[in-house]
Length: 125
Image (cartoon, rainbow, N blue to C red; front, side):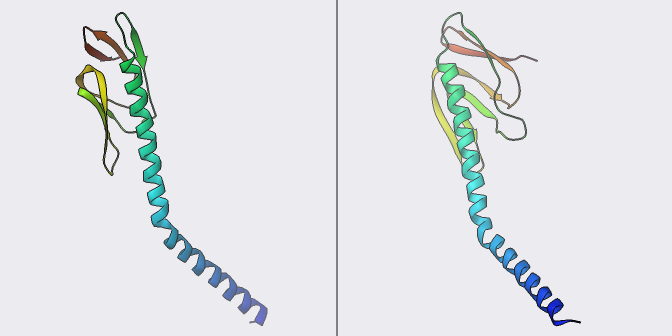
């Protein structure tokens, strides 16, 4: 075998070994970055839903849809709080109005309105 072929094979071998080592070193940081990104997206979803619900008034009907089924987490309404479990913890935000015990799923359509001081929620096919 010519020497240039051996040198080329050694070069590629070294390249592959260092590439794998780099991925192993960076993988934990990439996982952490993905979790932080997911938490940020969930925080924005919960805060957006809270803003919509808190802005309800008498006679106002809101059609609500958020996120995508494959990328976002459910938002739970209960008592006077909104919550979302994102893997490393739970996001909890307070509500201005009394909420029913319901779980809002991403990419589903809902209708919300105020009845007295309580929010009513139905899934709108």
